[in-house]
Amino acid sequence: MKRISFIHHLLDVVAPRFCVVCHHRLSVSEQVICAACNLHLPRTNFCQQPLDNMLARLFWGIIPVERAAALFYYEAGSQTANILYDLKYHDHPEIGNVMGRMIACEFSEAGFFEGIDVIVPVPLSRSRQFWRGYNQSLELARGISNMTGIPVARNAIRRLRFNKTQTHLGHTDRRENVDGVFQLKDATLIEGRHVLLVDDVITTGATMTSCAQELLKANNVRLSLLSLGFVKAI
Image 1 (spheres, rainbow, N blue to C red):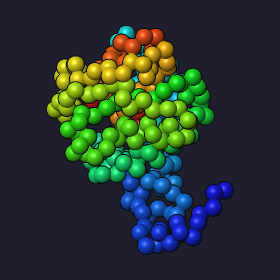
Image 2 (image 1 turned 90 degrees about the vertical axis):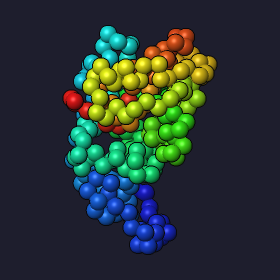
Image 3 (image 1 turned 30 degrees about the vertical axis):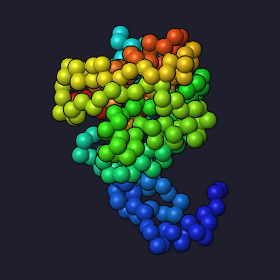
């Protein structure tokens, strides 16, 4: 069992931390999410069947995907949605790193990362990243990398611009909104490799598809997808 240092105990007294889901105080051994909320997180369990699940089927006949999984089902307005709200909009990049490590631990047990050579986070536009201060998908990727040892290729692809938010768009409009948004930047980082494309949440798969199509322009690329949240339907 990992020992909790005196400093950690002291910091917990001086600056108590709270669960991102229920907002109850975290124990000194907990990070971001409390044990109770973690236990009741609406997990998809897609990592157990990564070739055929609701997420993977979004991409059938569109792009060749070897594996696809998300940690939990996302529902706007739910307590669980606070994980993504705070990660994206409330200046808490550490949530991405912690949740990325959680994903790595859980998915590794199912062998999800076997054969993955490199992780590519879905990029933000320069303006979006400037105002946010970080890329939440990169923070997730770093957390996964910390636990698995798989390197992150943050410069393999770039986002040319930020279009209007996808939140209130339908399936067709979402695809049109991200058409031509991404550009392959350095193919040498991914050529001949099995790439894991990582994003914070997947709804229709439009953003992932647009990004993946650029990655697949590099020679001999195999592709798998991973997200923190997944929306069952819109």
